Length: 461
Ligand code: S2G
Ligand code: ZN
Image 1 (cartoon, rainbow, N blue to C red):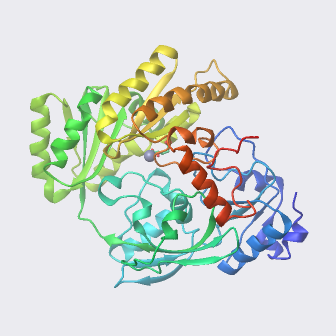
Image 2 (tube, rainbow, N blue to C red; image 1 turned 120 degrees about the vertical axis):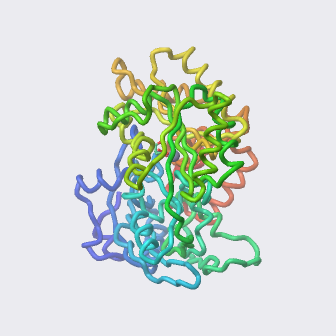
Image 3 (cartoon, helix red, strand yellow; image 1 turned 90 degrees about the vertical axis):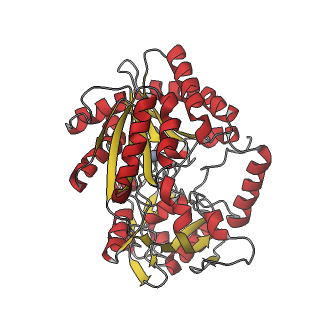
């Protein structure tokens, strides 16, 4: 347990919270089912203070849990064993902007939506977007290599990190890449830190690339009777035009969003599944050609095209509102990915397993089908308590992960490993890889102070 008096050797008392309410607020993220028990929350304001904190933690064997927007879904920012939470809420500034380089230098606590707004003000665009962008922080997005709804066109967070200053668990301050486009000088530690979930270093500053502003977008929602045809629809459109997004959701997901947000159905009749497509308005004619082709093939049965930006936003609500609309059902979540070609078969495998084994469970499918990324949400039946339900979920996961493994997929496409998927890492990473990951953990965090027990399976007792 850490006393705030000793923490005041590195931070001002106004940068330290220990009251029970603060511990509960900052000691967790959006993941259910884990104990929340930090010993303190600290709010550093500079790179120097991050280095002082790491030195302090090493000297006093204090564990640190980095915490950004606390929107994580794998328990990556949960402090459950007396750790000190390191919140980046007060390191949230834009430090510099270079129009010529199209690079924003910012602190990790900058809210994603604020980076997007700043880019827009400069006539540019930060293209990584997801439902939680109003709360998530860019440092957390980098630590989990966040994906979201535009990956099909703009890639992942990893693709937009031009430079990074990071304090490793050994206290070294690494200045990675300095915003260079080309830099062939050995191992790129930037890319090791991206997706490391705060287990190797505390990100203190980021150079983020920005994209040119896209032209106005059009959104199309189509009714898809059979998920087997989703890939044909994807290729029918992507062969003709550049898609900014290709999302999918089941009718059950749509019904939950309509009920939760009081929204009208997008089509005249209900269909088992829907795809949401987004593209440049200048490619509308090509999209209409692709739509006609898909109709002739019977791959889709109906569709609606946005006539205004307001209607485009309303159609996006049907997809982006799913996570929030399912929250009251405390779903057991799986965030899975397989190669795009494997998606229909994989969907059928998992559906068969759940329907045969758990016929009374409601299964909600949705996700970024254009990236091979599916979000499987199993809704908690009223007959089960949260604890009973999560226990069942944890017993289901190995079978689901066997199906993922059989198709060389990933047990965590974009939400990270954290605590939730830690013990299942071997379904997607080989033994040699995991032992090398352990070696890197010891190299970058020799005293094991950073985000303990996250990401890597606990070593055999
Ligand atoms: C999505 C959001 C988190 C969730 O909607 O694409 O990544 O609830 C998700 O699965
Ligand atoms: Zn997602």
